Image (cartoon, rainbow, N blue to C red; front, side, top):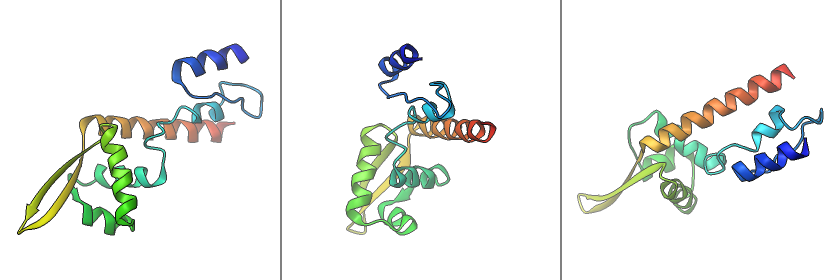
Length: 127
């Protein structure tokens, strides 16, 4: 068991902890493999909003999610640096406009994250 956990940690960079049953391959250990960029509540909310909207402005995201300017800016930048969001800055009637879109890589990562969460939920219900 310990060898499997060490090998998995080396391969994924994630720590693997045994489940209550002592098995390192349980649902609890798979939770450590979640995408850390997406797994933050604010970033998950941003991706969720963009998954159902082709494009949203900074103001629209801020209002929809109830986030502060600084909080939204920091989390959007983290997603942009990961390649999950694209950010376009322009002016509309001399007013700055920042618009966000989910990138193809972002949509794939979000779909993978959702699939992983669904598998964890199924496994937890089965245990």
